[in-house]
Image (spheres, rainbow, N blue to C red):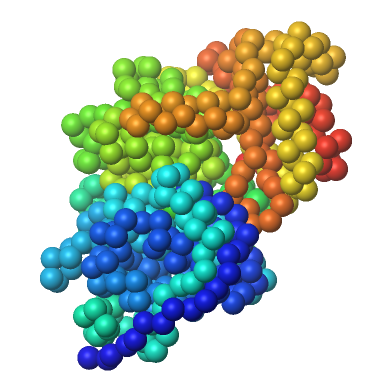
Length: 582
């Protein structure tokens, strides 16, 4: 038993960003400044009620990005000093964000302990490395991100903090080996348990999906599979799930060794950054040497986002959640008794709305941020949800879950092919096109303008709000750009009243809604570590079966032209093209 003492360290407030549900994200060089991480951690402890800290069990892990190992030791020593009873750490400090949520909700310690919260070390889909991004966020006892009431308190404490507590003489814990290390401090015992990162999560997945049916699909010589972890934390789960449990070939896995800098790449699962997977699936600029696999998927750095691909075919995240919802009851045992309801974020296409109406399901349109889905799930109102930024999930946890989404698609493919494994397979593209034939197609794209000058971004958004006061002026501009585009019938800033707690979220995105069901959405994203990201969402609904087979960029070209001219995008930002198109 190792003894330790508690030190009070004088510090000064820092002018940090206000942490949202995505937490605090900055460059590594900011986090390594003296006291910076310490101040945020202490502010979090100060913002929580005493029973959620003293005597509590906390999870501390993340996506393994640069500075994570040092941060785990700092948070562990501060947890001990603040009266936390035990800390659980995933082996090598690795836990995906959805696995953290699962651990909070499902894991029971040998002594019967349950976690009451977690510090998750991740900047999600942002790059990692000494010159790149680091992030930290706090999740609550339901496994979901801290609500705004808590994040507001954390921010307030960071601006007034004068000291923090730390057990500076507590030895660093070996996080590479599973086991329990026991310490004793002024107030009694303190334990650190390092546990296998994958076992709890895999157990949960096996309770949701029919692994045997998926295994049968993967064993078919006609079905080929490829999964790209982009050197993120999903690699800590990929071999155990896809190879060991489901029988896929190990050669099916790409970039599944977690790295502190994500192999120098950008761990964002989209057509721009997942270059190797995109090329292998036949969606690159040149034809691949080998026949593309039937199914491909990618994860982001912390494995809560996903991209689904078929052979030479991209599934939009908006279509993905709609197709999962439409097939969930038949294909996924967890939902066999029915769906409680479905929900999407406001910028996500209305494909899910059509499914909900067709299946007579409760439907919710919420602001961007997983906490809004969490409220609905905790109230028993929502089973499946998604957002267009490659996030999909269900009420099994309170975070989006990239591997869950891949298993959901494999389950749908297994169900559609259960009697066809000896014949021509039903493909990803077949499933999507049949969905369009049934529900109509929502042509959809997103333009991201990253690291835009923050002042210029705010000016652009203010201009768009002001423009909404005169729809006749808006329609005059549109007609001058493209006379073949429908008129705008309504324009506003999206506001949401939570049906569970009554809270109101305003200024959640600027909407232009057209008479024919088309939409233009403009929104500032808070997921970057510097500058501003403007996201432009363009959608057109087509229910005529004869018109659902067009190329998306061709179908959307008139609306894209209107959006760029209407917003004066280049004039405000100086950008002639977006950073990323998805």
